[in-house]
Amino acid sequence: MNADQLRQTYLQFFEARGHQRIASASLLPENDPTVLFTTAGMHPLVPYLLGEAHPQGWRLVNFQKCIRTNDIDEVGDPTHLTFFEMLGNWSLGDYFKQESLTWSFEFLTQVLGLPASRLAVTVFAGDADAPRDEESAAIWRKLGVPSERIYFLPKADNWWGPAGRTGPCGPDSEMFFDTGRADHPGCRPGCPCGKWLEVWNNVFMEYNKTETGQYVRLEQRNVDTGMGVERTLAVLGQMDDIFQIETIHPLIEQIEQLSGKRYSDEPRSFRIIADHLRSATFAIGDGALPSNVEAGYVVRRMLRRAVRLGRQLGLQDNFCATLSGVTIDMFASVYPELEHHRAAIANAIEAEEIKFKKTLARGLRQYQKLAQSLQERSETRISGAEAFDLFETYGFPLPLTVELAKEQGLSVDEAAFESHYQEHREASRLALGQRFKGGLADHAERTTRLHTATHLLHQALRQVIGPEVRQMGSNITEERLRFDFSAPGRLNPEQLAEVEEIVNQQIQLDLPVSLEIMPLEEAMQAGALAFFSSHYSELVKVYTIGAFSKEVCGGPHVEHTGQLGHFKIVKEEAVSQSVRRIRAVLA
Ligand code: SER
Image 1 (cartoon, protein in one colour):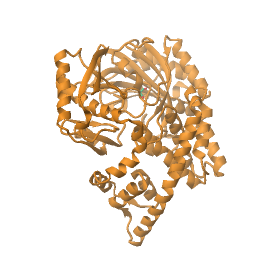
Image 2 (tube, rainbow, N blue to C red; image 1 turned 180 degrees about the vertical axis):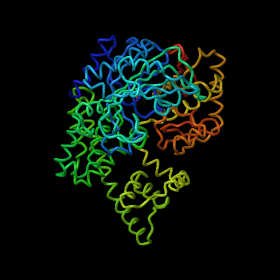
Image 3 (cartoon, helix red, strand yellow; image 1 turned 45 degrees about the vertical axis):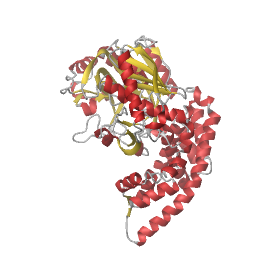
Image 4 (tube, rainbow, N blue to C red; image 1 turned 90 degrees about the horizontal axis):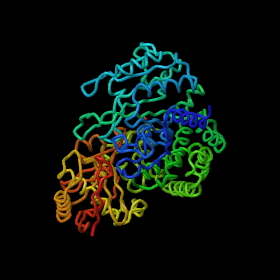
């Protein structure tokens, strides 16, 4: 079965069971600046999982392009990817476990023809938040899965979500394919040894995780399922290496042709280049041009890593644009936006490659000097100051220095780098201003001011309504901000006036806005509001406004609140039963 047959067969199977087909959403989440990329098919459906009526009804099906960066450092082995496609079907308060598990079993065994004897399943073992999922286990047994192939596992394995810090989530039941490899004591589905491949995850989203960390039952019991296209194709093709599948291998072949090297000579570099070019092509196709902010920064990092590894393989100029073209050829009929933006994607990738090569040449010379002087001193650790110099003067991001160092058996004092970064923040503001120019140029001054105003509004709403207020979406144009948030009902005129007053007070206080970079976990401990998926364990930016507000956010923001002018709410309205929308302007 090829990729398109898999997509179409899946869609048709669920359409025959009353599901409506919905389009793959953009990789850049609309109205949600707190997450960089769409990471699962459920992501664009959060409002509907929480109760809003979906225009297409209660049963939905699609395939969704996704990017996950949490495992980006694992890319290079035979199974990890940043870009992938996810097949998904949803019940929004309609069918539940019985239908969902039965259809999954039917699809795997009867449609895809996987032998039932090679499947194993996991269900939630239960804890203080939710009961043991005996119901799913009983359904699996009735379908013919023997008890010894049904594993009860804790939250760490069998609970999915929320995609942000709060939101819909629930116990899940996962389906695994037994590759036939030998097991070892303690091996079970979920073990990373490679014996068990997870092919499908059915999440029973009947909880909402609140700001206080409680799991509250939703009025609506949902099903959210996700099946990886790449993984399923690898299972069907009996391939150990996911890079052999039809929607990746043409890239490997092209790299072989361009470099004259064999895949088996340098599999790690081949895989990273292929994966990163898939991600960058799709992300740019949805508007994430390489930059120093937000999703654009991730794209820049991936392209730069590909360029660096490509040079080591002997790839010639503009190979990134060539590989991006191969990606577009593979997917253009499925994702027409790629064809539509073909020229723009190629231009952006080529420009980035040229730009980076110039910086790289200068930085590498400097790095080599540094490594040599370390060796002369018989040292193996690059100090924070040295790594910081590479960053500030040569634009070498810390991960690049760390990677180069690793290759030569050196290490980098990353913690010291961070504190240098903080110390030099003020001093380097000018230099940063230059480096950030590309990103900032996209955000007119007005949008930046409205962005900071959004943080003030968010905190003011929490003060007036309560800390359970949760950001549901944000959209900023040059004229106005639009902020969607969860609230029990409409705000009365007094509350609106109070929110306005609080925001204007903070503006009058001319509070400083500061930026710190820290691991997400640390940010949360410091009380920062964050609606990032728990997967983003990487470094995040935290913007603090005086003692008033602290949020994880990509920015950019103004330097002090006095720059905002006068804040005025122009409209308050309902988006759904529990979601309100405020439009506001700065005068
Ligand atoms: N949201 C779940 C996942 O990503 C099911 O799609 O695994």
